[in-house]
Image (tube, rainbow, N blue to C red; front, top):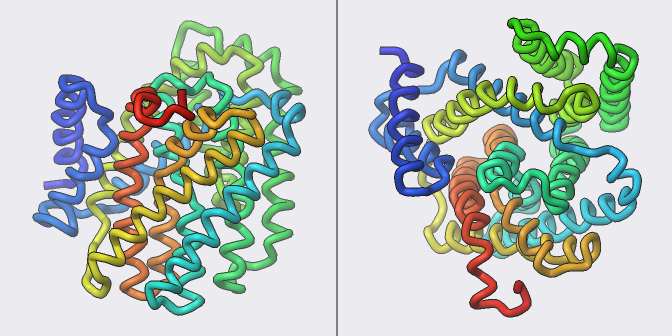
Amino acid sequence: MDALPIALFFLLVLVLFARRVSLPPIPLYIIAGLFIGESGLRLIQGNSISNYFGHLGLIFLLFYAGLELKPDHFLRQGSGIVTSGLIDLNVNLFLGFFAALGLGFSPFESFVIGSAFFDTSSAVAFATLIENRRLLSSESETIIWLMMLEDLIMVFLIFMVSAELGNPLLLIAKIFTVSVLLVLVVILLRKPLTVALQREDEVPVIFTFAAVVSASALAIALQIPEAVPLIALGSSLSHTVPSILQRTVAPFRDVFLAILFFFFGVTIHLTQGISLVAVVAICILAIGSKLIAGVLIGRILHHSTRSGWEIGNYTIARGEFAVVLAAVYGSAPVSTMVAIMVIVTSIVGCLSPRYLGRMGMFFPFLR
């Protein structure tokens, strides 16, 4: 039997259960995928179809985040956001690097692990913001901009891992050019686009789907990260009729994103080669490093420890790209370490923001 129908059945059961007990469903998707996938019962495997649907979940989520983004806010806080990105990089990359060195990994392996420490999961961060109805907060804007900055910085980190990926300056130039062109096209066609999106037939749905998929395809064809052009497209279209676009995108985002998380768990294959102590140490430090960076960012950008704690909690989850980076450039122990770290931080990153308000009971500085 095909994997996708089985996955959809599990997703329906899981989301009903999650809503019943008032839990965020994302960790349940990942755990269920682990249980029946490569690391568990091996009932199903990921394939090209599931990979494509999961990819659609990510790109629609990035586009939706762009709809909520206000570029004029970045212009007012640009230097602060760049400073925050550098704090995020230095705290996480160096803590991950030196922790891996202390656990006996080579300098190259430690750099791969440190890069994985830095790579926040945009999918988990944005989905958790939506789940907790925090997408309109000032902290969420900082988080979204941090995700974009991380993509740009990751270009340099990838280049340092493998010189075969070309010139990072050329990649950044292509990212900038594509993003600007998308924004200009929307500005020039704003009036006809607004009219088209206000129609009562299938035109708004088909336009939105085609625009998002086309922007993603263009990024892939040019070999650039998809996050920046997709968020730029969403941000520029937010000046047309954002409420209609949000209502149109939401079903695509929810269904495909659930598939993404489920098959992320399915395809992870945990191997032997590292100690339990090392795994626990790395996972704890990975959670702590984002909290430390978040507090520093909150103090600088929002002048609030409470805001920084929120930013840190929403950026705990590490990205799926971290697993890819470790699988391609790391040894088997590195791949296993990073995969477990991504799983643990994804689950913690989904749950911790939900109970963020209660932490003030135990930590006076967060009140």
